[in-house]
Length: 317
Image (cartoon, rainbow, N blue to C red; front, side, top):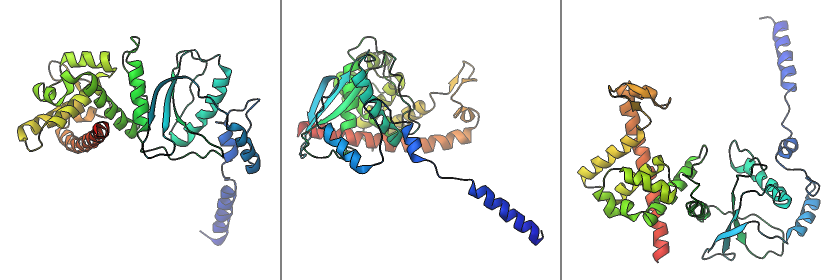
C-alpha cells in the first residue's frame, strides 16, 4: 500500500468517525416521561425545585391492605395499598401512575408499560408514610424487607380470590426468583404445615399429588414452585451428616433439574426445553451440567433458608 492509499484510508476513517454522535439523553428520557396538561419536563434546576414545593400535599391511592413499621428508623410507617380493577376512568390516578412508570427504565431491564385501558389490571403500591417539610429525597429502600412484605401481601390478597389459579412472573430476574422462593417457603410453612413442616418433610420425602393440589389452592403456587419449596423443606429438615438423606436430597434436586426433559414409554425424548435437549443424548454433558447446577441450587437454597431463619427470629424475639 503506497502513501496515497494510506492517506485516503485515514481520510475515509475520519469521515466515518465524524458521523457518530452521542445519544440525545433528553429525547430518550422524554419517551418515558408522560406529557400532559399538568405535567411538563424541565432541565432547569431552579424551576424543578420550585415545582417540588407544591408536592407536599398528597393522598395515597388505593385501599390499604397492610401496614407495618420498621424499628430503628425515624420514619417507621409503611403501607401497602391495592388499586382495584377498572381504574381506567380515574384520570388522576392514570396520570400519577404514568409518572411513576418512569422509574421502570432506570431499574428494570427491558421494561415496558402496562396497557392502562385494560380493565383487568390490579396494582399494588408500597408507600412510606412520613412528614416532610423540605425537598423530597428518595432514600435507599433496599435490604429492609419491603420486597418480601409487598410480595407476601400480594399472595395473601390474591389467595382469597377463587378466580386466581396461581401467581407467576414474566421473565423474572434471579433476585426476584430468590424473593419468590422465600415468600413461597413462608406461605407453605404458615398455611400448609401438614405437608411442609420439618416433621412432614421427613415423613413424606417425595412430592405427592395432594401437595401439588393443595399448594395452588391455598397459596396460589405453581407446580414448579411447589416442587422447589418441597425440596427446600426437605433440605431444611435433614442433617447434612446423614449421607442417606443427603443422597435423597441430591436426587430430588436432579429430578427437578431434569423435569423439562420428557420421555415416552420407550425412553425416547418426547419434548424438552431447547436449552436442555442436548443433555438427553449426551451423558457427559448431562453429568457436567448436573454437578454444576447442583452446587448452584445448593447455594441458592442455603441463602433462602438463612433468610427464612432470620425473619423467623425477628418474629419470635
